[in-house]
Image (cartoon, rainbow over all chains, first blue to last red; front, top):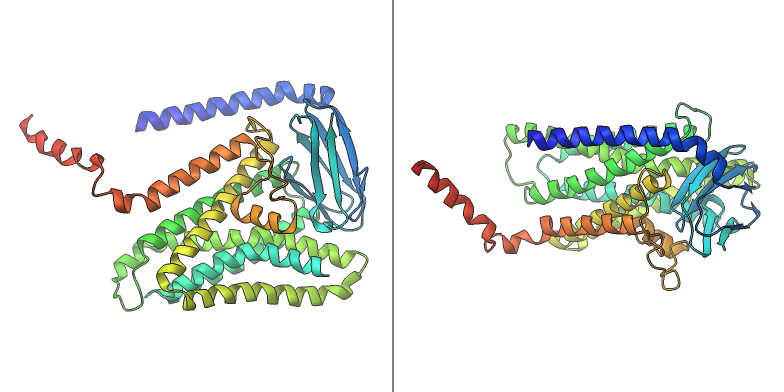
Length: 120
Length: 288
């Protein structure tokens, strides 16, 4: 039991170290290689409401809340969820998408705050 | 207006589920008075947590920078899921100690740790979702309608939350105790599963874990998880119209474990061969 615990501990430590190292190595590379898409949210209106992205490639999405009210960027298709205060920005790292449509919405303005990615 | 109300109700429903079930359950117990103190303590702590979280979300208090808030929310989800499961096991174990039973103070002391667990689980259930409600209401006040709508939404929203609580209490009276207990157990397990799925998805979003295959299938035509009904089902069961493989595997493992621990052994315990070798091994020891 002790041995098992120790090995788990050292395994997770090693894993953490590896993760840190990977982040260190990949971090700057990501910033250059991964295309960044910008989305403006304004009190329940997305601009643009449809974003075309390359299929099979990681992308980053910067959401800028230019409205007067907070918004919650949410996408069950893309496993993202975050509250963004008025004037705030948030960047999402999004897994490679297969060709198709992926919806996102503003949970605090559900009626009008609807948008989608189209991966091609 | 209707939409705002729905959001307030939906965000408070999770807290009401946890608080309502625990309240109905505690009321039956010999040590109800102690338990209630921890229950309401948890509610108070949860409201304080919600307010401070809301301030962080609004960027007014920015003690958590970058992904800090994400990791904090992740921790809250996973701890809440774990504690809800522990609560279910605890309720199962002590389910039959009703008011009439006499309990020694020793047994009560042994349960002190669990009371704190109860307080934390209530605080997390209340705090997590209420924080978003606070931010949403703040937005409502800052938006077009201004503050005019706010008091009405607030009053009606709280009324809707209490109605949920009341329905749960009625459920505990109308249904037989056994049925109420079973139903609430399943509701809590579903909620914990949903939190687990949410947590794993957050880990994928934070790039800590891989999605493996994403999506595995698409049932959005059958039941869309972004709509009102589908969204509600999604946040209470972990249902996803387009699930990734990893959360799916985690959810499957979770339910198999829950089934094995809670529903299988009662019938199987007497029959399983696993219980037989133990006395044999004990018996052979003196011979060596």
